[in-house]
Length: 248
Ligand SMILES: Nc1ncnc2c1ncn2[C@@H]1O[C@H](COP(=O)(O)OP(=O)(O)O)[C@@H](O)[C@H]1O
Ligand SMILES: [Mg+2]
Image (cartoon, helix red, strand yellow):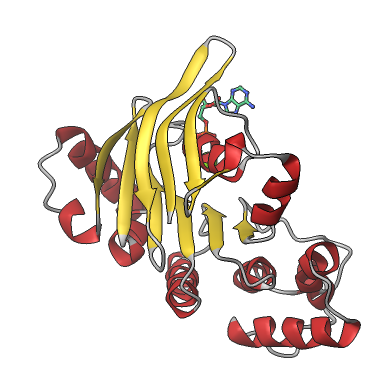
């Protein structure tokens, strides 16, 4: 579980997040939703420690990331898998080299062990016979799978995904969502996903926090989402739905 407690983040004078408190649960796909510019990426980066925070705590199963020494932070970093916006693969590395990269940096595995792990992860995301290809030689959906394989290569306890669907057609987007949810259950990870895709919210929102006007406006799940009496959330969903219908 990752507990965010009274998190406050500003850039200069501009307050982006004010007193966010929410628990992200183990073995679940936890979503951060909100309009573009609402602070989802800033929140995710604050959670993983890519941003300093101005106040509050982020507890990784009780361990306070922002309060600990660099050495302890590194231990927690090894327990994280990240899938950031775009797929951010290395263009000049083969698919297999991309997946192996975190193992080279973070693990003490032998070459053989790494090879085995790379093969396992690529197989697990249903990619076959692409090991030696470059990212530019495979489809966008396949690139996402490679990025997911890379994120899980280190066998993380915590998985972070920033808009994992962006740039995919709606059908492929659903497949990628379901893959992330399956892996979350299978490996019992605490997964946090930023999204403004209504299909994702309804499909894999096992826990959802809605960020609006700098704070956690609403916390619930995919079942309570559609029956919400929160007017701000309701109008956000309504505008998302119209956009989703237009783009289908
Ligand atoms: N490094 C930064 N310095 C200053 N302002 C930033 C920085 N990163 C993000 N912001 C601001 O924080 C706000 C929230 O951005 P972001 O988290 O990217 O939104 P979202 O991911 O929900 O679309 C925006 O107003 C953005 O301009
Ligand atoms: Mg963002």
